[in-house]
Image (tube, rainbow, N blue to C red):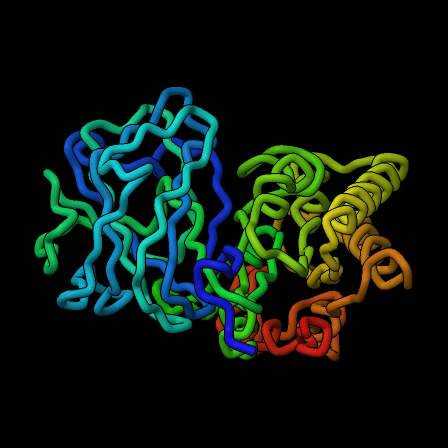
Length: 387
């Protein structure tokens, strides 16, 4: 039987980032908010020859106007230069300019462009003016570049200013038969705090390379995020539809979130035993909601156990917070709650002090892994689960 034509294949997410309001020092500087070209480097984890990008104005309070956009292969993730001859224009319903309504995402028209898994892509966007309330992803662990004027076709992008954030870019999708996407929903440990800027060594990157381009891994982590309450970005339950269910081609979901719910509970003052019990009940009830909603779409859900955190400064009293973590992990490990368990706790804890991170994996603050720790996490995921 002949292979299906590419245009008959479904769209599958190849890369993504969870969007949130961008405020304060995380916003683009004033000089970069008028007549500016923003070039952002992303790395899809599957191959394809037809692709499109997803723009986001999810948290904007006014329409987002993009005057022009181009897609190209980047020469390096550490530099804004493009691979010669690779740049192609992006269109939106055949037009160069697009207006993205407040609160909305917007897909580009498809473009033909052969891309291998783990190629670096450069998305260049020209804005006449950016809205005051920007949407983006501050914890990019990747450098973006900007220049004044319409420089979308500029191959060298020499003299560009830099910022280590992503803005208004929430996804890259490939049209590919037989491909699927795995979403990782989490906090800063999934977002990659402590990983190498432009190094692509988060645990999700490690997992993607182990999958060798057979499935995409879409990182939907937000640093400081919580399951139940808004904080850094909307809570995990609130953002579930946008960050999981709207991802094209998703078949599997890994949930690793809850440590910030524990930490923030007692950051300023101790809590009563009843409040601790209510937190555990609330987090596990939210997990159950996530599982039910994912299963309704045919998505398998794997629970990641929460990593040790003893020594992290804002857990007070430490014993009560550790009891919360143990109770939540016991629920995660209970058969029938998730489709399977990924025991990050077992992979990352200190054998001599199991309520602490293994010193070899500690990024220095007792809670975030270093690159070696992220490698261990990525290798702790059974590929048999994801077949």
